[in-house]
Image 1 (cartoon, helix red, strand yellow):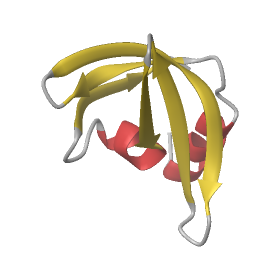
Image 2 (image 1 turned 120 degrees about the vertical axis):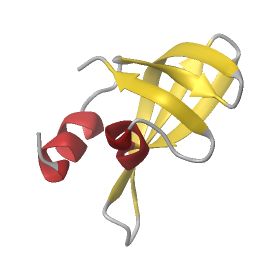
Image 3 (image 1 turned 30 degrees about the vertical axis):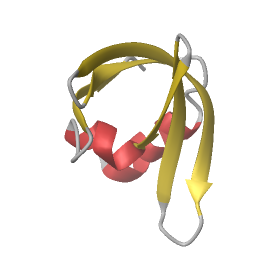
Length: 76
């Protein structure tokens, strides 16, 4: 899947599960909101995991992680 198609799919993915690691803690949460980051061509998702919220860029999900998150997976 190319980046543009992936970004479009993630933008409409409210209710979809995302799993991964945030630093040293595993999480499995649901996307509760998406937004386009102004001027960046980037989609950011808000993932709710219990009482915690994670704000993750879609490009980080596509790449599998970044400096904060690792082993990211989205279940489209």
